[in-house]
Amino acid sequence: MYYVSQLGTTWHLISKVNEIWEQHENNTNSTEAAHAQANKEGKQLNLITAIIRGRRLDERLFKIAEIYDKCGVPYIRRDKSEIKRKAKAITRKDTRNRKQKEIYIDLEEEQKIALKERNIQIQVQEAAARKALAEAEALELANLEKKKALGLF
Image 1 (cartoon, rainbow, N blue to C red):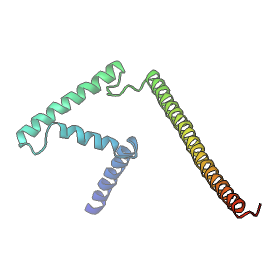
Image 2 (cartoon, one colour):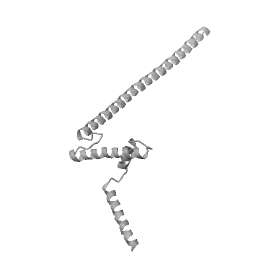
Image 3 (tube, rainbow, N blue to C red):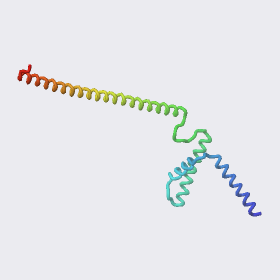
Image 4 (cartoon, rainbow, N blue to C red):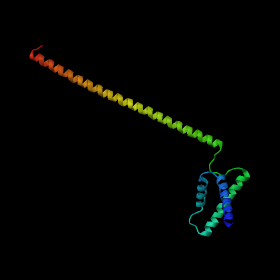
């Protein structure tokens, strides 16, 4: 009989845990935030100091919850209003457009530089071709003068 009564109590506790679990999010964000909040008051404190600071933290959090319940204004550090969200979206879009424009300008500049480099390469090749042609003509003139000197012409 004792085991059956204990089993009923255990099932009751498990059902309570399930109720609590289902009421909250399925991640640990709130737990992590509460942990960080508690550590703000200090770590490795004396027992009395920890109790006093914990009480002070609880009072502050209850006061915030009370104000929220009374006024309907949540206490958050971030402004999540629709206007703020739209302003941030516009800022993100402007930033993205500016970056794309900068990339486009950089590409244009790179293309201009590449075109200038290509033109310089072409000019160098043309100069080398003119030099080779001039050398060939100079050889022909030298050969022509030798033929005249030998009287072949």
